[in-house]
Length: 264
Image 1 (cartoon, helix red, strand yellow):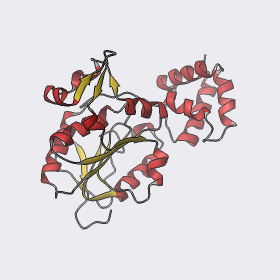
Image 2: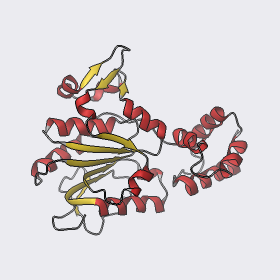
Image 3: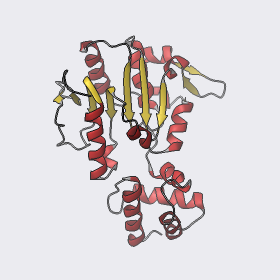
């Protein structure tokens, strides 16, 4: 049984160390704490005491990230978003290679969905999936999915980009994995010279503190290339508009374009 006092202490610790935000009496947080305590063989109070004494770089925090972060998604979860990206791509000025960043990449399904779309369009690309959980990044890199997982992939994509392996699982074709990487947020923020043509952040910022949300949004705007597109979900800082961005014309997708001539 996790008391209200212990749960509040957990919320405070996760906000301070990871920038994560959980509402009061969150069932998601309680479930995550119980999983973590079972993994560490500690009580909620005991695990809290140990974590409070360990620096953010201590290996035990890897276990925390793996348990308290949502690590699943769906292929082509938001068809309207992919339609908007398709339209943006066909209207933009061509470049030799697209740089794409997917924040909150979970088990990789959004990243590989983007790769399928861009490969179908004939684009060369480099995609960076970003997730707080090392476990999620490992799962994304492995790209192993069940038959149920791939059910949402349109048939013409499935035939070209998905292959069955001996274990009965499915994986994405090696063609898609070309120039795809999965990293933690510290890597993203440390890449001062990185700029992107397309940034997608869907249903992720709402799990972060207000301060951390603004950090991400400022980074997105600063590192988006002129003519580039930023896609956010309606729930992620709905009042935010950016200082130098124009709202995309699509009424069904919350997306922004950086005007040509603006510095990346």
